[in-house]
Image (cartoon, rainbow, N blue to C red; front, top):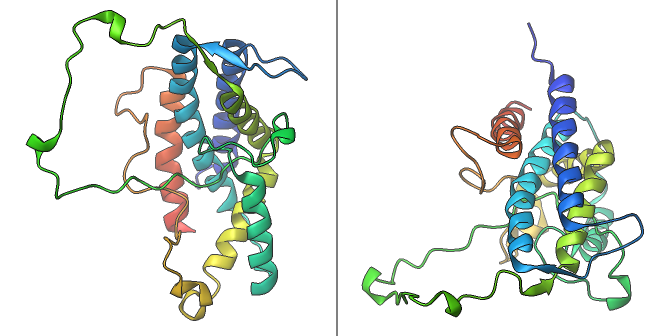
Length: 235
């Protein structure tokens, strides 16, 4: 019996929408209103829930995209479109701010790709790392200290937009995949020095992945990660 991908995608999508609803309540986001500041402790709690939800959503979009058949656009058109998409998506999933302050309230495009892993520094010896013990609790920032929440709220809205338009996000990713794998050996982009993506997923398990999930978002990430890897490798 064939695996029911449509049912798996729909179930995990509904679970992620439930997580996003919780994020909206925690952040105090209302329709047409953006929260500008949050207490530090609440900002950290929201970020701890938002990050695994974003990784799960990317894997959910990948699952949907792998089941689509699209035709790659011409190289010149694809390059121009990818540059335009990059300018729109700047500051969505990576925490960057938009270039134009007047666009602070605009919902950015959800980032379809996992952030690159930070490079390791093998030449640093363990003894070179300086650790400072904090004995006085007052040395830590106060948990109730207000911190900026504009970027955090935009990421929550971008995540909601991607889940509400899952088909559109999957089509964006399917088109990128068709361009990337059309003829990679002869592509002029192969000579560029910057890192090139060949997969949406970062190596290894995503942050927030648990072998034995205890929360809803951990369970969704656990399932979406395994299904996304299977969909990517078999499509």
